[in-house]
Length: 104
Image (tube, rainbow, N blue to C red):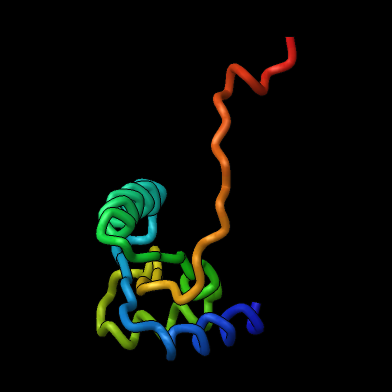
């Protein structure tokens, strides 16, 4: 939606690093973009940084077209993300073993 696009834009203004993965707009490339981001996210986290996908930037046609013009490419923006150091400590989210959560 336009509201999500506006929020993504405003958030990106205060973000130290913006990342964009682009390619031909097809299912295979969407999957490859997701896999690449997952690898990057693991490396980013290992370096003590945080990342966040900003989906509205590539899912909204208006914003996606603006990004395409901005990067001066015939490829489509597939994944837009930001990274930086979080000021607040992240909320602890416990992980549970699957076998302990399955009803028998």
